[in-house]
Amino acid sequence: MAYRVAVVGATGAVGREIIKTLVERNFPVSEVIALASARTTGAEISFGEKKVLTVRNLDTFDFTGCDFGLFSPGAAISAVHAPRAAAAGCIVIDNTSHFRMDPDVPLVVPEVNPQDLRWFGKKNIIANPNCSTIQMVVALKPLHDEFKIKRVVVSTYQSVSGAGKEGMDELFNHTKSSFVYETSPPQQFTKEIAFNCIPHIDSFMDDGATKEEWKMVVETRKILDPNIAVHATCVRVPVFIGHGEAVNVEFERPVTAGEARAILRDAPGIEVLDIREDGGYMTPLECAGEDAVFVSRIRKDPTLENGLSFWCVSDNLRKGAALNAVQIAETMIAMNLIARKAA
Image (cartoon, rainbow, N blue to C red; front, side):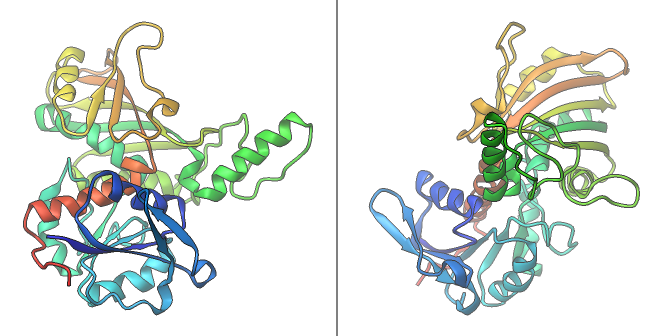
């Protein structure tokens, strides 16, 4: 069976990564349609080595006959066009934040909660979680199954690509300016990002948390377990691609670092690199372009009765967005949740 796939927001960083991922994973497509705003209609995007996709106008596109719509155009645009696509019979997998906490929309990481895909038909929409949430719950899931998590405290070190191409451009320009003693006022971030860390991602909320931190709390509970207490501090760092997270976990049952290491090594989507010597760990720079969530620095927390700490990194454009979306579509096909062959 082959499927007709629309990629919405195809000219953005995540959209281009989705198209690249479809090619790399040999996703069974009969046609791929690249969609974006009128401003970029007519632009060309490579699909593999020999094919070129011409970008079409999202505003006027009819989704009838499309099997999957992989959306990454921004929350406000998804709010308008995702329901329109879903009503036309297209299964929407949305990367934006708009539908994540909708009780009628499953929020899915295939390695963690694929069973939730069974109720996608309530709105014909599946939400892709926040990039920082995805990598954390992939690492937490096998540990939760074995030892039952009570509480998670996480500090994130998030790359500028989480703010899109404009964020990456700003890091490049700020870095270049610093070497020639020029000033470059921040536009995408609240302070200069080059050679800096900014403890502020998304808008502030009434309790002092940022929206990014709130997302990690509520999304982890929806995906993994509503009884887990989560506290997050999210920081933007001068890295182009790849998020890092320092995760501290309190369990209900006793756990050793060795037990956790063995369980994580056998878990899907995880690679463990945990050697207690110089360089025996994974960094964001090294995970760029890779599909896995890499876990390092696994160690006992002696301040808690059943505590553990670890470090994890992942490519936020791939597993944190594009790859997870494509994996959702693959999982739906494997679970026989979509049986209609594309026309």
